[in-house]
Length: 182
Image (cartoon, rainbow, N blue to C red):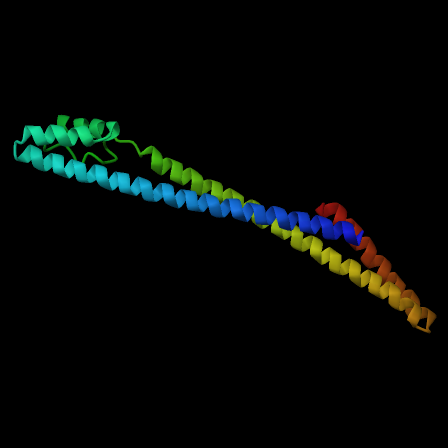
């Protein structure tokens, strides 16, 4: 039984390590996606500022060139913004009031990767907790065997019975714990 408990604890510890690794990789993926999304959003906003500057200078060629560099979501957001009267539009097309501006897919993917890392982390914590509980049972089982082994060294029959009963109780608790924590 001790070997079975040790094996099962090792399995849970291995699963915990695997989930920690998956969680770490998911956090790394989320960070990379977030950095890329931030860089793209920063670039699109800079393109918009350059576009606005070119429009203010009535430089149609430069405005068209800059517009050609924008991604389709940004073009739709800018078109919505341009269609509004200057008094009614927000200062930027990248506003929540703009129905044509949606959160870039990269940001959504980064959030999903971060959520995945949280799920993996919780799973790893659960596996680690189960492993620790089984290791505790393993220690209780070792105590049961130790008290059972010490029984023969005592001269008093009452002391032998007490140690033997402690050993049996610990063995029973370890057995029940193994069934519950399997």
